[in-house]
Length: 141
Figure 1: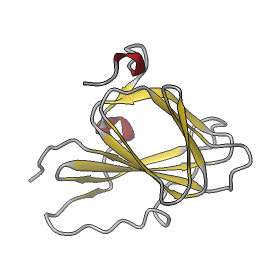
Figure 2: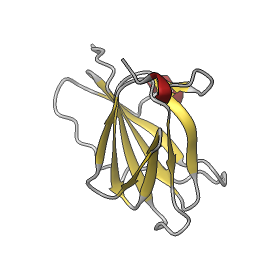
Figure 3: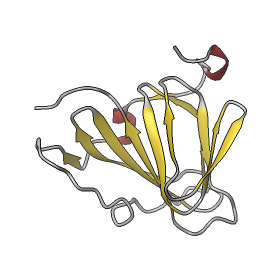
Figure 4: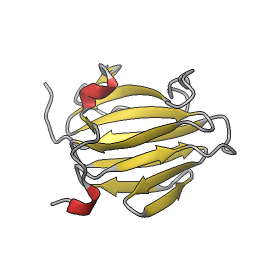
């Protein structure tokens, strides 16, 4: 069960559908994702990153995000356990009182319904790619 101090029923709770239709559905074989090459363009909004659900596969959905310096995802929760990984650039991931500086290779795992946020520092590079994997456990035909 999630730590009650990290849950907040007033923040958005994201499901895979919050990120749109998947570009690719698993075919039951190996699926390769080049997260840097297929990362979405940054959103022209001053605060939101470019976001795209890239893959819907058995047990997981892969969402790619690309942050420009200064962009952020405000407090939110995931309806499923997640992993997040920085593929390029630098991001700050906050969960409760803990802030983790994410650089390429850093992977975090969160249980469902933990309030968290992602910030891209103003002095970060132009491209800051985050790979979000929602561990849904569902099977697709």
